[in-house]
Length: 478
Image (tube, rainbow, N blue to C red):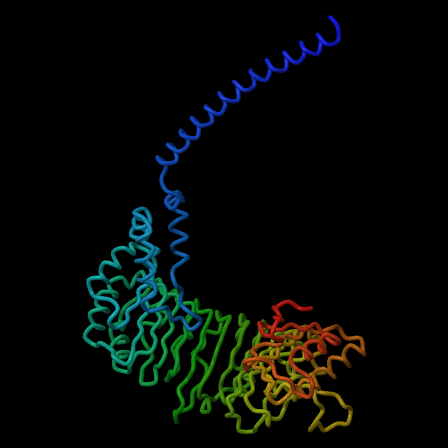
């Protein structure tokens, strides 16, 4: 066989292979079509994707999607019910999960005109044995007749109450609510907030330790007289503001000293009588004061574990000073928040000495410069009050505005530069809460330029502020 015959034979073999492969391709395509049809049929038989989640996971997702109360513990009055209704219409499975998961029905909002007695009873039934969060909120059109009927229904489950939030009720309706709760025991109640108590004359007895033995967090607004909590061994957070008026002398014997970790006191304390170092709070970690005579409180408190002081001066100090005259008693406190509305107060150097161990400091812009200037000091050293913060790591300046320029920041930047020059570590400076619609220039310096200047002597951070028309600064530094 010559070379030509060999080539023709090879071509014949290749064509035979081609026919075989083509036949196989046709068969494979037919098999693919059959397999696709089979898959389509199987998919049609499966439940829709919306129903494929395990019931336990789906119920958790629905639960987490419900509206929560805000920082003042007020929910969206009708939002919870509306969200439950919307989610139950997604599919029959979702409806079954919504109706059959007690935790989804744990929040009960009693708001005039938004819930009937029948729906309230149904709600309680669906909640099963789940702990209950009770929100009682009012309006300018309180429905007194409806309120008593509500209370008759919900107090039947008092053993399941975990949280009670009472907001914006009229004096009459609040009295009605408190009367309905008197004499009842709440064995599971952990968290209570009641505001606008300005006409309440007696401390609610259902909040006593023997009536609410599990109570951990308590917030009462416009209260008088003092609460009766000294015997409590479970209360960890206490937030009380006392109404203004001419009342007799009080002391802080109501405080459960052995269990508190967070204490907030506000309002009128002008008639309090407290000997120095008379209140020992061994577990206290956070102290917030919004009162007119904080010196009396601070001198009385002994708190070896105190880590944070949040102090707002409401302009009621008789001696016009911001310091507490406590010596070194609070030198271990590492975080301080000073909210001063006035710049004509004295005692900034003494205040910084008292909290010389501060690592994290928050200041309001209106009085910020007083911490970093040597003005009105008795010595000629040129030192400033903030020099006592030798361990400072983070400084936050809030309530910013630049309508009158940025000169207020000059003392701060000089202090930061001097700190670096003498070998001190860089401080993180956070600028927060710009109050104008956009930064404005002053003597050629706007917020962006201020940020860049701060970069030379600190680690600046700007919180969600438009620096210019096309530049946004996030919460990261650099």
